[in-house]
Image (cartoon, rainbow, N blue to C red; front, side, top):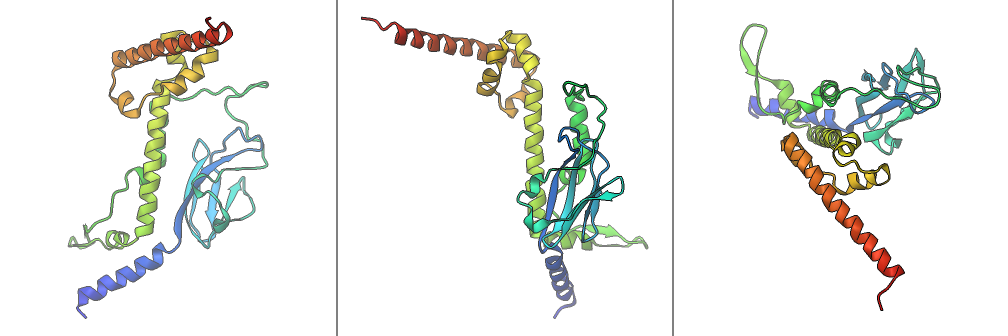
Length: 256
């Protein structure tokens, strides 16, 4: 067998072993109130990989099907959770039996002082930079210690890690969709719509649901175009309410 064919066969075999049963677990960690999200919680797998929750209590960890994971906070570990028994690996949220003092709280209700959309989006991009920046592996060269160019073995191995690549692309797509939905909610917010239309709170939620614009429109519309869309939707909504009222009156007072 040709020397390079042997190398390629060896890489494929190694890649097959590396990809067996690999997946990602992600979710959030909150305190016992299930309201306050806890940062700096260590998430550890039995295979030795680990991560920590970010400032919003979120984590992302690569695991194998045979793994179990546990959460460690203030040097106190939780029980181990078998990966094979986790129903929804894309949203494995847990709460710890601790009280975490959030930065902004009141006695009667929780008051949230949110960052701007741009700050939150940038933080999300940094947290999941490996996912957002992922691209399909291909044949690349690398420079060795002696300055000589050669084949990038890691990149070549990743070409054959089909399940891993598919999972990362799927997670990347989900993160992008979530980011787009957050941007639509940011621009088409209750405060913005109420300011433009002066709609009553009783019907505001119904209006937001019926006339929620697409991400493509929101991303490309300037302030004037966006405000005009909200106004046009408001006029249409008022007409639909009037028609509903007319139908109710006809039922109560049918014409002879």
